[in-house]
Image 1 (cartoon, rainbow, N blue to C red):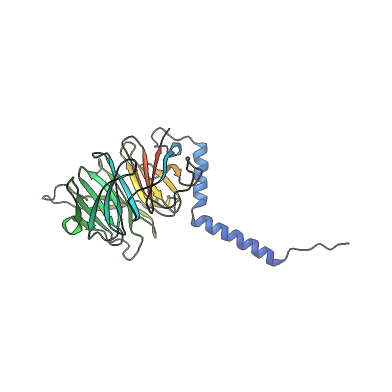
Image 2 (cartoon, rainbow, N blue to C red):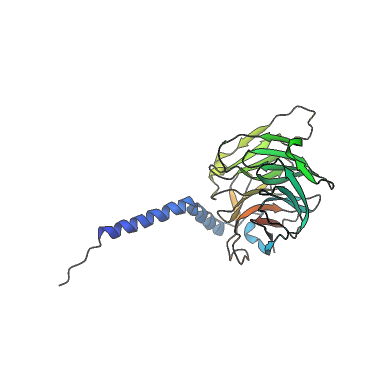
Length: 302
């Protein structure tokens, strides 16, 4: 009669270690929260107020931005010029792009440090962020602008979480509420709301208020924040994460409503977006994405 062979304790330990490791990895990448959100999204239809990211499909994929060797970082739509602006950080430049990803002009940036984000504020007015020094720099651009010097510009430094090399990675602006959203990449991952900067009447006294929402930020099931986009029509915020390959739509209370995956096979993508760094939305709701080093994407609703 054969004796039953009992599993060795070593096997139990290996299985246990594997399970614990899988759980740690899943928690690290917020996979449990993401799976729960996807399940809820399947059970509950998206409301009419939602942007509805799940419906978007790629119409221009991984187009190389010709003539650009440096890493693109961030993206913003200029509704006046009907064009896009991005910044490069290795060789600092402010670059204007057409809506099909062609370079229209290049503006040298002097003294901007690690330029990481740019945001349209009003006609001819933009804010550029310096990630490492946590500076926000207001600049004026017209048809004759050939270079911008930070020393000549109005700027402010927040000085939050000094010493971290994961600084201000994304900007978005609410022109009605006069709020500038600033995304801190991670460690910790935060979204600040700045009231009072930039200001438009320098001859008058003004004050700057910085507000954050820990409850909203804790509910973001992404690994990092690369870029932001504020939608004036819905009042919702889009948050882009390159490490999670995801765009999240947040309602006015900061609750996730819909998502757009940047993995291959999703939303018509043949390949995953390698390192998404910038997102912008135009007046028609078309989404534009940039990915390092120099790739350009367009997503539209059918």
